[in-house]
Image (cartoon, rainbow, N blue to C red; front, side, top):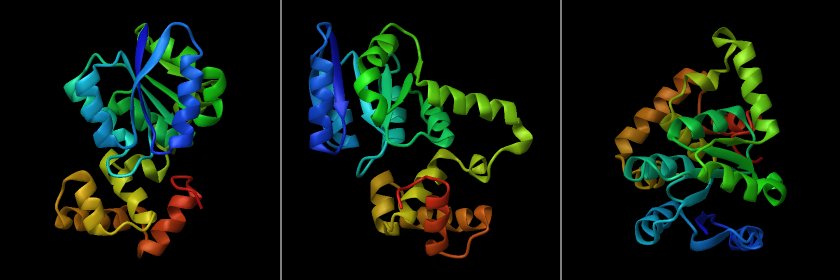
Length: 212
């Protein structure tokens, strides 16, 4: 049996995903987590074969969880589950160490196949995600978006600022100082040619980094 850890902050979504996984006769959900820190704790406790991680969770987000899990458990295959099918998220997820990436809308049809594939040592992308990455390569380095100039941490801070989180909340979430968050904010405004947090929110919505 493939032993699966499932992390998503919405209990209804987790319940649906659990049912999909456990309808298969070769895998079972052995642990559930509602946030990033719990996902890391449950991984340490239960030693799953595969971790399925939502990219957008309170506290530590999915990208941070993947990076932490890869540092501690480099052989653990991680599948990112997300409502965002944007190339920035796909690229950052694989840079963080994910082995697969699927959207929540494709989960009913593809979740089980994705788990099997990454458990077998391969990578998994939906056709839509693969097409986005192919278009990114075709555009070439000279035609990349402004977002490509941001580090993964800058992208994470951008999303949280755009969603209205305070500097203190962001500092606590990423275990950094408020002064460091201030530095990230200043750098983001400069790189993106923005003036304030309101413009940052509009930019994030326009670039599909957060929901409107």
